[in-house]
Length: 467
Image (cartoon, rainbow, N blue to C red; front, side):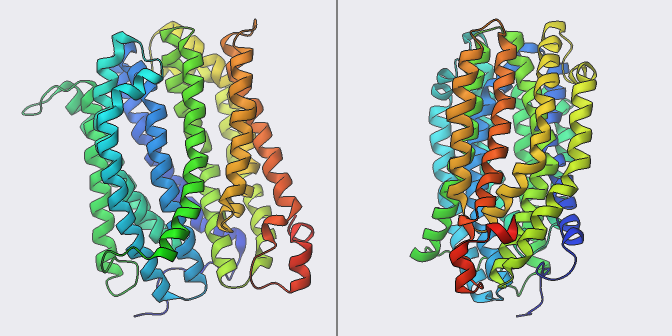
């Protein structure tokens, strides 16, 4: 077995390493988000308002599935990064084998439960009767596709744990291009392909994610044939499974809170009009695009932090935080400015109906300004995640959503602000997340048990050194 596979992120220029690691992730995340954006464009222009609304009400359930997939695979990435930083290759193999075993079990449960409960879940979200058949069929196919999504997430997380971000990008590029081609063909039907309507959009995503998975597996098998990142068998080691569950479950719970937050907001929005639902469905997807650069930086920060801790170099974390924030500023600022200044142009890319455009326009002007908070809290949360402190980020998310966003949205929606009150509640929750995350990072208690520090420094915490 080689002792130098992957990329060591514990030495060299931190801003250069962050850029090299984050840029492929950013491009990949933008392309991945392209799945939903491409679907939204084709669905909005080919099938109309009802289909857009059906996709919108399904979105919170889809977010819950993504939360489960990314939570478990985030745990794998963190554990692989720490083991790689400490050069413990035998442990990497154990983590990989256990992660694949858990993944197979999770997707079987997820697919079965989702298929049986899709209509019930949509009912809980207040789905109007006239779009229920559309939404139910779309959601069922989306849940079947979750198998490919989970396993492709797992492949990417393992590769990123050893510092390889280029092939996950290639896989996503291939699948996004395929999705863009298949969408209109399966929605409208062409040649031997049947006309599937909205279900065609879901099937296009399913086939595309499967392609990404197969491409990633072939790459790992060929380039890293003798390395410990390919599964050598199924295993369920109690200690490793416990670590994956501990980190992954907390991350899953955090992202589930985000999904539930969108679910509650969807319920509030459905009380206004079908046009409002469609507008929220489009505009909330733009939230994902706006967050992509910050999320890419969060992943880079998390991996650099985990490898630094594994290598006994926690003193690098202060610079990781500083450069992560500085590198976020220009791109997030530009995205926020475009959304605030040109909201109508953006909405017209997705829908044609004037009432939907008007509702989305207000969303982008209000929430778009709040994207500036992404500059800060994604970086500080990335450090906490890299240190394995996912309970901290869970509590921060809990406060932001359950204490602030949901109650405030329900309250403001009943005032003269109406629908705008819901949008203002979202921005205020962004602010609370930022302040909470930066305060906890500066406090330093999260760092007290990091190995490689002198006992006196640990007793004081790393807040003064790293903040």
